[in-house]
Structure formats: C-alpha cells, structure tokens
Length: 53
Image (cartoon, rainbow, N blue to C red; front, side, top):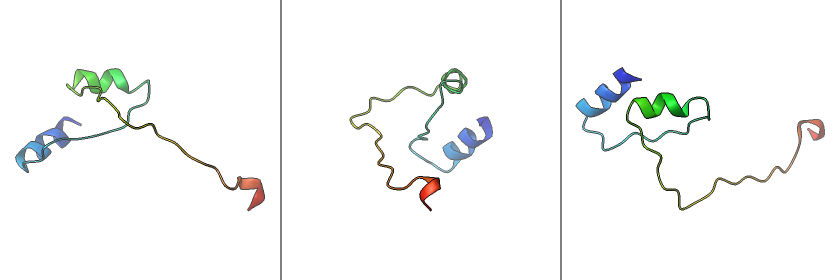
C-alpha cells in the first residue's frame, strides 16, 4: 500500500479512495487515510438469488 501511495504521488494523483472493512479500517488510518463524509449511502436491490438462476 505504501508503494501504491508513493506511485500515486509521483503521478500527480489528487487522492486515493477506498472502501475498508471494519478489520482493515485501523490499518488504513495508520497510513493517514481519513474517513470521508459520505453524502450518499450504498444501496442494493437483489433481483434474483442464486437458487433462481
């Protein structure tokens, strides 16, 4: 992850966004990722289950 961050900086990227699990959250915090303020909530509708395919 540190290599990815350094590569992104060298390429002039503005930011890196990611979705973290509860377990991964502290790891990313240690790398200076900050929790962003979400204006939207992730949503999903399941139209078919695996049994109906």
